[in-house]
Image 1 (cartoon, helix red, strand yellow):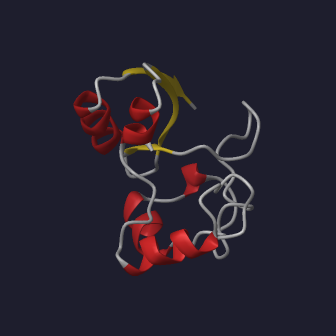
Image 2 (cartoon, rainbow, N blue to C red):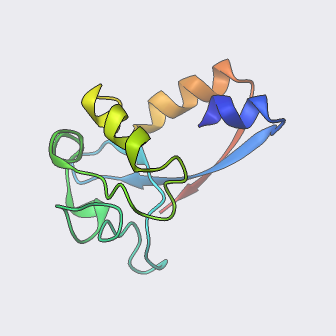
Length: 112
């Protein structure tokens, strides 16, 4: 997504960053409010509640994305292909910042 943003002319992006219960920082745009952020309910078919209730290993190994969620503009077939290749997961902040640096993007971080 960051490479695409850079290719279409964006020079900065804003990220929602969550501190998981294991101490890992991850990037995720979930539903919720400032008092109850990072809700997985609509994004996942098998995990409910807040992203803050999970470890990174749990999210990485168990989460199944809701391929039909309206915020996944790429469509269900692309998400299915990414899942088959092991490339459909919630990234760590470190992974995203590495990609942002390669794309020369300014990153604004909102801690949730």
